[in-house]
Length: 212
Image: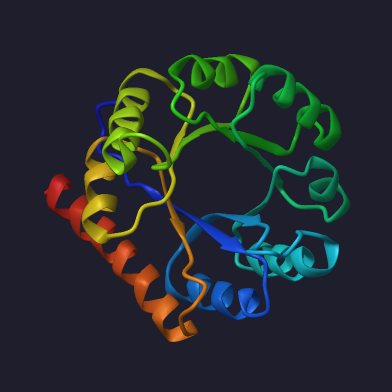
């Protein structure tokens, strides 16, 4: 990894649902977004009807639209790729997804808490490896894994579940390439816009201070 300062980019996670398009549009208007991961909502199955408008919104703003755990749907909607969930055989899951979406699409995945799975994903050809705060250790364990990965490996890292400007700045200091933030579901579009803008602002300020 280069010793140059990393300016982390934002990776949004949005759940499908009645207000998903409104919330995503607000987030996309608030900051420069690298990628948008579209996942099923609470009690809502992800399908072409509710995912396609989100794919269109993301791509119209120059963000890569990714579908969670459904390579067939990603291909059908002409999304930019698929995000894999932790599994018992990450290499097989990657190869299956890659075979469906093709060589030009993005295939990345959540490695859970397993360093071995993260390395296997990278060796298989994944475009990024993600770590989440779920499970034992929470955000602290995620940050440790992300810092370890960013220090050693060239494949980009996504830190999922970032909830505050401070968390985001700390991960940027650790050279994590992508900051994953989940859009709140029970708030207004204005609140979503403010949340995303606050994270983006913290990243910009930290980068400016570190570079200066």
